[in-house]
Amino acid sequence: MTVTRFAPSPTGFLHVGNLRTALFNYLIARKQGGQFILRLDDTDPERSTQEYADGIQEDLEWLGLTWDRMERQSDRLDRYNAAADELRAAGRFYECFETPVELDLKRKKQLNMGKPPVYDRAALSLSEAEKDALRAERSGHWRFKLDQERIEWTDGILGDLSIDAASVSDPVLIRGDGQFLYTLASVCDDVDFGITHVVRGSDHVTNTATQIQIIEALGGTVPAFAHHSLLTGPQGEALSKRLGTLALRDLRAQGIEPMALLSLMARLGANEPVELRSSMEELIEGFDLSQFGSAPTKFDVADLGPMTAKAVAALPYGEMEQTLADLGVPADIAPAFWEVARENVATRAGIADWWALCRDGAEPLVDAEDADFVATAKDLLPAQPWDGDSWKSWTTAVKEATGRKGRGLFMPLRKALTGMEHGPDMSKLMPLLQKHRL
Ligand code: GLU
Image (cartoon, rainbow, N blue to C red; front, top):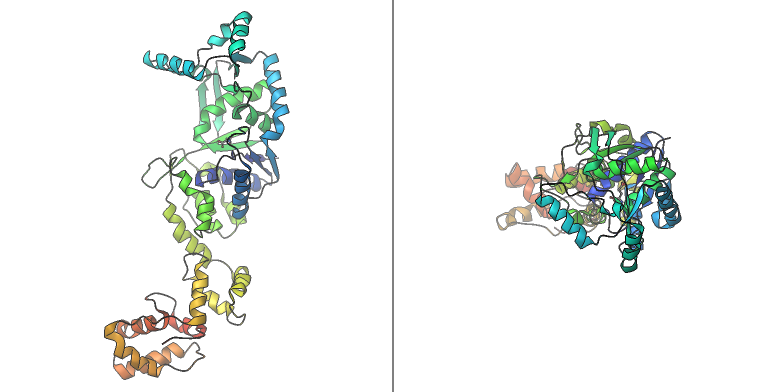
């Protein structure tokens, strides 16, 4: 069975970059009838908070990305301890004592000599007596000893990849203060939860190489890996610093529709055009990881506006019935009101404005040069209630009385009744106006 996971750290709110990872993993699992796991990577107790953990779940729920199981790494520390023991027993784990300053110095020296800044494994040659002496003054951290060979895999997006383990530092898996680092925890979880596919950002490619060796050292099955490109801004500029301003909860507060966001994210960076989908089933159906390329993916938050307007316009009446009733739209005119409003709002919130206009009428907008014309038109306005012919008969009468036609006839009347220059077909809107203020 296909099992995927989305593994955010609850150290911040989800943003559009995280969403891409979540969505890909979700869609793969659902397309295969598999399982999708939400895993909270909360091994860092200082930075992880319950508020963020709750926020992540709320955001995924808002989008309809349901998970079959949730796990927290902080619940699994015993397991990570056991894995560390296993790696120690297998001779793949070694204790190091360099301080961050010492490591930094080593890196600078290597770079000055034109060498890659790879950890030199100096700790491997420490004697027991030297280690004891060091332990007396500081606590050691633990590194995984990579086999220095080429690590190869066929990436679901990037194709055949090969990384020389000798070009990578042995990863630190346990910090000096005893905290397990993501790499060890993630590998244990992927093995234990039977993860079959891991999709994540291309910033994880080197991690994947080292994780493959750790998984093998623990006797686990290596999942299929795929690394999607990172998002950039519309001009190709790095988005990493701006991602904080692209939090999913902010987009939600701005009225962005889930389907607009999901449809865009499920296609951005693929060889296929972005199309608004009307349901999760359609998104699942149309998703194909092999359509994605390695080039950075441009993301323009402005694209979400028009997509949202389209998504609102596409909402079936049945889905809006309760919202309209809550706004106070009488049931007998609600379907007709929805037909008019749906095409004329940027977000769902705009529906209330249209209803306020229909219920109360609008403050007329009358240009000085149209004052006499509008006064004449007012006298010719048929009595309410209006129907589908009211606009036609009114404008015909006004035309006869004033000689005006075309835009000069229609626009001042639209502005007088709606207070706006743009809006729905007036013959459809007039029957919905419960009052006017002309
Ligand atoms: N917590 C990690 C991150 O957010 C998970 C990476 C992974 O998918 O393994 O980067």
